[in-house]
Image 1 (cartoon, rainbow, N blue to C red):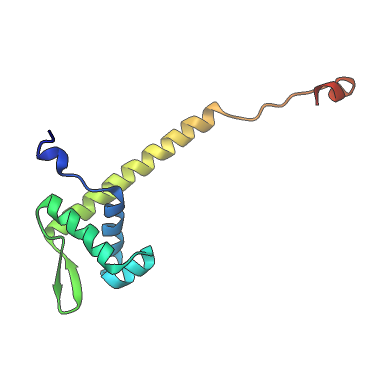
Image 2: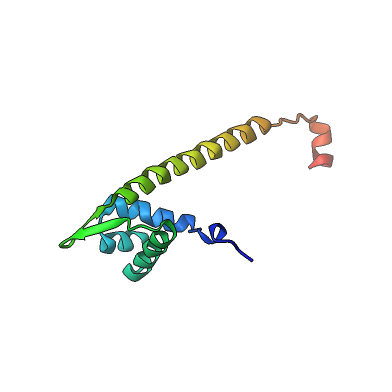
Length: 115
C-alpha cells in the first residue's frame, strides 16, 4: 500500500509546463507554444497545485501572477533543471574522455583481404 508521501508526485513534463507558463504568464500562449490544449495545460498546473497543497498563480482580471508558493517552486525547478544539466554534461564529458578515434594502418597488399 502506498503511503501519503509516495503519492505526492508530479511529472517532469508538468514542471516543464509550469516553467513555460511562468515565462509567458498566459495559459493560451503557453499552450500554443507547447502544442497542447489550454485545458491540458491547466490540468497539469492543477495537478502540481494539488501535490504542493497551494495555488501557484493568482489572477487579477485577465493577467496571472505567481504566488509565493509559485515563486518558491520556480526557483527550485530552475535549481533542479540546472543540476540535471550539470550531471548530463559531466556524464557526456566522462563518456567522451573514454572514447576517441582509432586509426588503423594497413599495408596496401593486405588491404584487399581485410576490406
